[in-house]
Length: 86
Image (cartoon, rainbow, N blue to C red; front, side):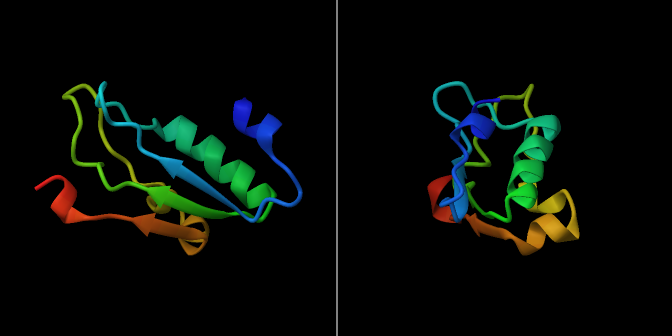
């Protein structure tokens, strides 16, 4: 996985963006678990840019990474803005 290869001991947090446009896709549960495992293993804070999480195509469903477990929620900073999608 690319994320494992990009890790550096000087890294303090991981910021990821829900890649909505142009395909309306978001991370799967399995992908989020992989991200969370890497961040837990390396004690990284997760900064999740989920501002466009409401813009999805029908075949995709949105799952916030902070809902995976209480431990993951404690290390998350969620970026949300209802003005972006409403």
